[in-house]
Length: 259
Length: 259
Image (cartoon, rainbow over all chains, first blue to last red; front, side, top):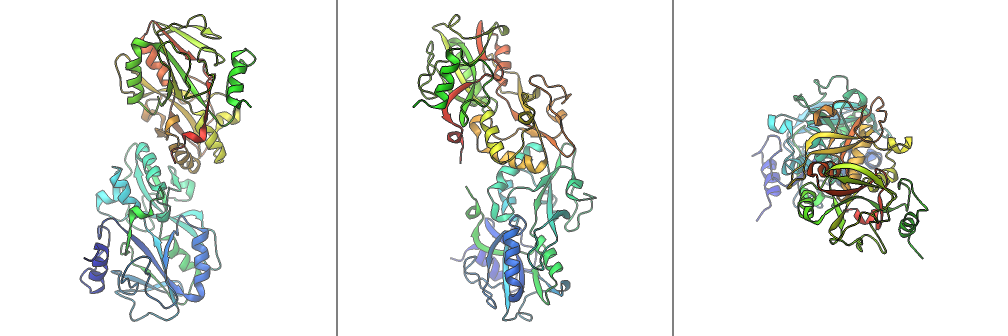
């Protein structure tokens, strides 16, 4: 019997599923994708190592290879994501349905953990997550927290925000601390300006959410950070997943729990 | 060779040490004391079980016995604490140097975990603790959070407060979550009024501390809570330790860490 995750990848590959991936193959780890020329790979790998909270690397390919056996049987990074963004010289130039037309023998794919894994753990722990309740994308902000640069990669940390009551935030810190492979504990809570966010009502990515009386905004390092770093590095070609359209892996979220 | 903790208890017992116990026998668990008539013991035990965050029970005696072998070799709860408070009908009536004059065959002693254990872990994790830096007592407040009553025991949870930057508070939540036997994770952070504290500058016990710009108050359940519950229960006789003068046990703080 095929796993739910392989079923999901095959449905995406044959074009039968084209939407965002939250809710696909529950319990399975989904990942952010970053594809770069091999000449940029050592610096990007070092960038991930230096910035494990925004860039928790969970898998990568050999140059030119499209498989990552550690993340899934019969996994093809060129076809198994519902949508891709193509960057030329650091600028987004096109949305792609698959990478068959642009794949090259020198490309390396990196897969970076994603907050969907810890959000599942939050919901299991009965911690409400506002943007999920609203059916919207999590609000994300370019913060004033600088990442540690590596070669041409660098720039601000992008953070995601979830408003919570303090008691829920304490529980959320406990729950997400168990998942260092998917951003781990928050990096900040409370005053947005303390981390360089001028207007909490206007996220740089995703959708705004309401912060109710008695709630504080809680900020996690976000997997969109590497996209900022790629724009800074300006490689001739780069590819990422389209926001919300992640790579569904065979790993289980529970396998990423550290204790 | 005698352990540091036994040395400390023997020094206290012979009157060679009469001050507060922070810093005595580093690395060893210190405990809050509550002594009650055996007729109150079942309800108090249930009160601790129902309220594990303010009342994490780490040891108790048999009626009339003054020993707790699980907490220490040659430990005598009647003599091994630098100062005691005597309560009659729930009201404090005297400070005592030891319990030799008031001990009775029906008394039961309870030892409850104390924040000194997690404060040691915070300092090791490089999380600054303001009242330790200031050499003062931690500020404590009668909160609006009700404890779960058991028989005559009940009343508000007393909380201790440590101001921290959010990033330090996140780390402090992780560190103290490992120590459920000594109050565990905080119960609240941020707005004091949300837990019924009207004036953060005026603690009900201990000393006020400065909350600096960019810091938030972080609140932990406090081992003074059982003293409030004893006042509510009004037993004919009750005894507690004098604030800051704890029972030094042979347990190591590291033994209380849950992972």
